[in-house]
Image (cartoon, rainbow, N blue to C red; front, side):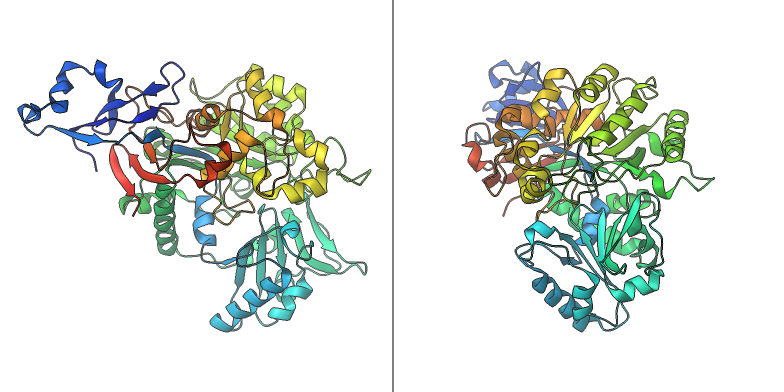
Length: 549
C-alpha cells in the first residue's frame, strides 16, 4: 500500500481524459493521489531535484519511476458488470468458443462434468449464443438429457436473461406443460405444449432458488482471482450490478479487500429480489462513496436482450409483424424502486435495451427531480440499444446517464443481424449522436453477459467504438464511430461520472493515481490493432498492482 513518499512518474505519453488538459508527460503522486501533473519542463521546484543528480538532497523522500515513453491512460472504469457472477462463472462450463462451438460440444462438456462430479449435483454452464453454435439454435432439455439424466443441468445464455435446463431441473422446479408463464417471463414450449427447457426472462427465476449458492469464503477466493485478471486488463474500478438472487455482495467485497482486492467498487442491489423484503435497507455507512467499497443504489430490469429477442422494441423483430419482445418490470416494482432511491438518496439503474423500454424508463425518470448529490446522476439507463430521439433529448435535458457496452455489437453481431437485420443493426448504440445531443455516456462490458471468452477485456469494446466493425467483419454503422480519445474517455471519465465514483477516471490534481501503462501507443496504432494492445503495468493509488511477466 502507498505511504506518504512522493513518486514522480516521468517520461510518459500520458493521456489524462481531462478535457481541460488532455496531455502530460510527468506526474507527482503522494499518498496515492496526484499532487501535480503536466510537462516535465514545468515541474515545480520542490520536485525538480529528484530529476537531477541532486536527488540525494531529498533524503529518499521522493522516488522516480521512468515510464520509458510508454502510453499511459487512466485506469478503466467498468461501469456495468457482474463481478461476483463472473468470478463464479469461471468455475463453470464455458459454453462458447474455443471450447464449445456446437450443441454436441456442449453435450460432451456436460457429460464430462457429470463423470467428474457424480450424480445428483448441479451442473452449470454459461455463455452460449445460438448464433455462435454450429446448429444455429438454442440447446434444449432433450440435448442436455442426452448428456446427463441423473443430475440437474442449467446452462445460462450469454445475456444472462435466458437459461436452458434439463428434464431433471424442470422436475425439481415443478415446471410442466400446465405451469403458467410467470409475469415478465416465458416458459418456451414445443409443438406439443411441453416445456423445451428454455426459460426466458423471469421464468429463469423458477429454477434459481434450487441452485446451490457458493459459500462466502469460496466467493471471496473467486473474487480475488478475478481482481488479478482485472488489474492485468487495466481495470481499476467497477460497478457490481447485482446477482440473480437476493444475496448481498457487500461483505464479499469487504472480505476480498481485506485480502488484497484493490479495485474500487460501487454496488447495486437487484430490486427484483429485495422489493418484497420489508426490512431491506442500505446502512448509512455503506453509502459513503469515498470508500473503496460502497453501496451505489438499486438496479431494475426493464426488458431482456436483443440477441435473445426479449428486448422490448418499438418495432417488430426482423422477419415478423408482431414480435416486440418482453416487458419484465411491473409498475409496482418501478415505483417502489424510485421511492426507495429518493428516500435513500442513492442512484437508480434501469436496464433498458429496446426502444419501448428506454422510452418508458426515461419518461418516468424525467418526471422526477434529481435526488442524488450534485454531480451524481440520479438515474442511469443501462445498455440503451435502440433509443428514440425523444428519449435521447430527454436524457440530455434531465441529466440521465446512458451506460452502454460496445462489446455487444463486436461479439454478438450474428445474433443482432438475425434478429434486427443489417440496416437496423447499424442504427443500434448511436454513441456519437448521444454525445452530440449532450447525453452523459459511459462505457462498460456487462461481463459476463456477452458472447466473448474474456468478457471483461476493455480493448475489443474500444475497437468496436472506433471502427464500428464487429469481430466477424460485420459493418455496425460507421456513422456512429467515435475517435480513440473519445472512446478512452468514455471508458474512464465518462464511466466514472455515470457511476458517481469520486475523483477517478481522469489523471488530474487531487485524483486517485489509478492508471495503466500500455504495451503500444493506443493513440497511434491502426484502429484494426486496438484489440492487440495489452497492459504492461497497472497502478492503483500509486501502487504497481500488476506488471506483465
